[in-house]
Amino acid sequence: MMDYESFKERVMNEFLDYMPERYSDCEIELRKVPKVNTCLTGVVIKPKGTPRSYCSPTFYMERMYDQYLECESFEKVMANQAIYLEESLKCLPDDILQFDFESIKDKIVFQIVNTKENQEMIKHCPHRDFMDLTVVYRAIVNMDEHGVSGFLITNDIAKSEELTESVLYRLAKKNTKKLFPFKSERIEDTMVRLMKRWGVEDKHIEETFAGKDDIPEKDRVYVISNEAEFFGANALLYSDVLKKIVNSIGTDCYILPSSVHDLVILSTETFSESHKLISLVKETNSEHVRISERLSDSIYRISIVDGSLKCITDKMEEAS
Image (cartoon, rainbow, N blue to C red; front, top):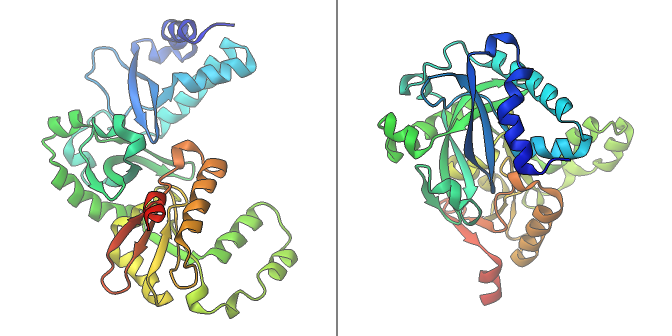
């Protein structure tokens, strides 16, 4: 078995041998890629002599090495990765290398990350603080039934395209809501969809949620996300989206960041013990949410009067 460094060197030397002949004029480039709550070694394939490509599909050395440790076959890992990369390249627009501001201005969207856990990412990107979170920006390259692909707007990209943070924020404010329209639903409806996906019988589902329509509005719990289930927690940046649900419930509300993809909203009167909600969020993050999808161990309180948000942490609870 190879150690990680030996594996990485062999990938750099041999990976292109597994690609079709038309990639013979390409080269492999390594780059550090800050991801949510972590940083990985990205591997990019691009034509020799071209400028740094921001949009090329990226695969990750650490993940390939994990696959190698599991199957113990370098050749199998390389062959599978070559197939994946070839399919990814087919999905890209034909003009993907013609990267400029005009090609991405309508595709720049928000991404909210945890400030404390993403210092490496934040220092390389245009950003703005938002409570215990940080807003960064992504450009969407492709959206289809297989998911969403894109790239982070780094300081280098912003500088080369003369994009200020305020311009990025203005564009993302418009584009995020347009490309990923928010949706809200009762948590029971979310559970019904999941149970159907898991193959639970309709009769059992109906029995489980038979009395859901009798629950008073103030006692109802809502989930906010979007159809793509992609960074739905961006709704925190849209007071109109949040306020609509808060007004329906009729009280101040707590917002629980269940992941980077969705939020849970519930009444502060019905669920008054914020320290228990914080414990629930922390436990859920620790035991059920992948590291790359964790947003925060805090919860947020939104005012029904003016829609203002307040971050509530366990330290604040201890001090109160």
